[in-house]
Each structure stands twice: as structure tokens, then as C-alpha cells.
Length: 233
Image (cartoon, rainbow, N blue to C red):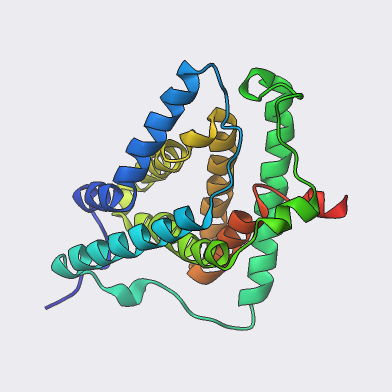
């Protein structure tokens, strides 16, 4: 039997629930909790080892469910391009620089135009390079690698396989989903992350190789949104 090489809206909705249903619900609850406390962002966005391991377990479980669903739908997994070649590393670096630069420029503009989305200077947390790296752990690196694979498999790998007539709408949908499960960081952080996602989608037009997107995402999970300019301090 011929395997499916495209997805329809039913597939998109089901996969969205599998991948991010709980994350969207949890993020929304956290966002309203922040609002009720008159906070625009959580005081600390760092996850501990237990949270990293929990995230790894949840994402592995969701990947298994998604695989079973796609198997049921007779999806052709060979259409997903995980090839590694001489351009893989340069693309990773290019995507980090391009997406990071755009996100950094956007955040500077956003902070100037919408300062009320950010906590007052005396309440904001700024980490030096040493302080940032002191929070690195094996669980963080493993979670970052898995999370980069997990999120970009959905956004860059699967969603773009929607039937062509629905493509413009699924792009808008993908940005809304990416925003929705990052609102726990506040509106400012969620918008910066959505900007990163937008850059990835534009780059996806030029290349269907998934690993550079996934590993660039993992880089941002470890080093933070935008370019890690704190390393120059």
C-alpha cells in the first residue's frame, strides 16, 4: 500500500495535541498565575535536573505516541530528511547566527517599544557567563538535544508536509502554537521565541535538512535566546 507523504488538518490537530497539548495547558496556567501576581515574567527561568529529566521522559513518551499515530496513518517516514553531509555544520552555524541576530534585534526593538512587557531593571535577573555556565548539567544538555529534535520535528519536519493548499494557514498555526506553549516565560519571551521560529520557517524554504534546525534549537536551549552576548562580558 502506498504510504502517505502529506498531512491533513486532522493530522495536524492530533499531532499538536500529542506534542504540545499539555505544554500549552501548563504554560497558559503559568501565564495567568503571573498576571494575577502582577508579574510580566517569572523571576527565574532555569530548570533543575529533576525538571530536565521529567521533560525528557514526557517528550520521549509523546514521541512514541506520535510514532504510533503516524504508523496508523501509514505515514512515509523516509520523507523526513535527517541526512548528514559536509554542509550540516556550516548550516548549524549559519542558522544560529541568522536566527540569533534576528531574535536579538527584535528583542531590542520590542523592549524599546513595549517596556511594560519586561520587569523593572531592579527586578530583572542578569547572569554573567560564569553564572550561566554554572547552571549547565548533563541533564540540561540531554534535554536540549532531545527538545531541539522534538520541537523542530513537529514545526520544521511534519507541519510543512500539510497539503499545499493549506500551507499558508498552517504556517500561521505553527507560529501560534509555538507562542502558546512559551507564554509561561511572559509575553516578551514568547514573542522572541516565536520570532526564532519564524526565521526557521523562512530558512526551511531553502533546505529540508532537519538536523541543522534541531541542533541550532538545542544551542539556544543551552545558551539562551538570541546571540549569547554575555559570553563577551
